[in-house]
Image 1: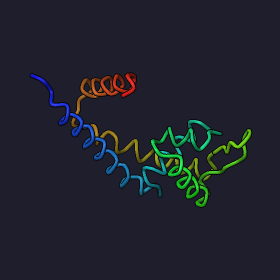
Image 2: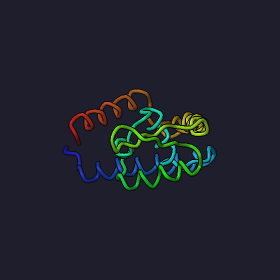
Image 3: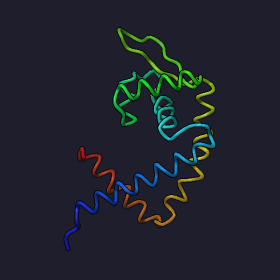
Image 4: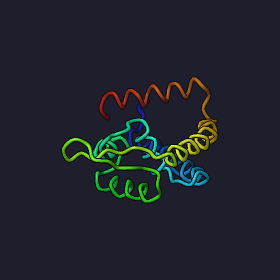
Length: 138
């Protein structure tokens, strides 16, 4: 039997959409959207990163990330500072770190529910399969 790759792609997209929708709704309790929380997480993981680096890390265009960063700055969650040359570096404020932590608590409560239909061997197999796709540059 051959797997229908179109259906496989749709199933992957549906799972990603379910994750996004669920996490976006849950993160409202922390006062952020999933996109905002993901940006805070990326900045936390790479303090001083440029907007371009953060756009790549969060799967956004440079322009989209710039707009998002502007909103996070306006909310007092992120700071920008000049770097070398034309580089502008991003760091979390104390309020940004607090919001990230609140989001992590929400995510920690929601992820087990999202993955509940899979037992541990299925989760490991899914992780391995997705890691293999990523390593192949797909």
